[in-house]
Length: 298
Image 1 (spheres, rainbow, N blue to C red):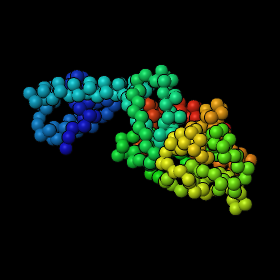
Image 2 (cartoon, rainbow, N blue to C red):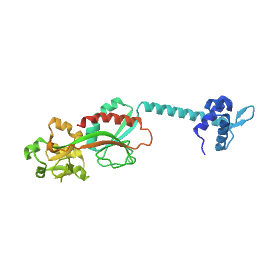
Image 3 (cartoon, helix red, strand yellow):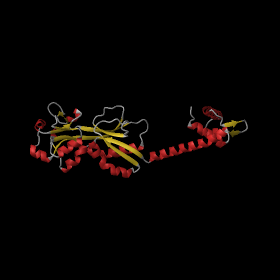
Image 4 (cartoon, rainbow, N blue to C red):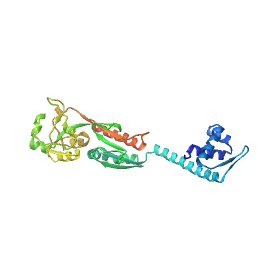
């Protein structure tokens, strides 16, 4: 068995106070409890640290060495606790964030400069992946996920939600016309996803429900690729507000079939593992990015 820090503290207190009774008063224990701790410590170390009589205590050679080393260890522990406390009051350290490419480009990168001004001691590591990742395997602190969550082993925090728009460029609509009903989409080039069929269910009301399953004419794995295709006039796509709000405001993309839009909003979550109190650097980022995402919720 190994010596514990509380045993080291009691041993040092006995030596510094000069007696078991004085040390007991200092550490808030009975003299008999302190005496038992010393005996247990010596048994663990298989050596005598203090020669004790009814009138005096003398450190053995092993005791002198152990006393000096114990003081160093306890001082280092105090310093570590002080540094950790300071770190908790002032966010610091490496923060690894993972998100799909569209969200990284449109929902995080535009705010990095402001975040770094607020928290200069946090070192950011930004990784992009359009597939769901294993947080532990990828050494990730936070993963941002769009849509419904399936992994119940993770802690999740809602960051808001984002509407979906059916969009096309003005050039595409000028060349091929603007659909006036959901059924007319069959006559157009549709941009959709290669994976996860649910992403190809567009939030459009029709006689059979409020979701319309499309068959993409052009499919891609990344929403950013679909956005670029839409901007280039290659078809009509269904894209999140967080990645297209600037395009809509600038007139680069035009919403279509708005009267049929069911108003579905994709949830945005930050997911993470948490075994105890959430690290302050993680908490600061979550609070910060949540306020920024509020602009995409309408």
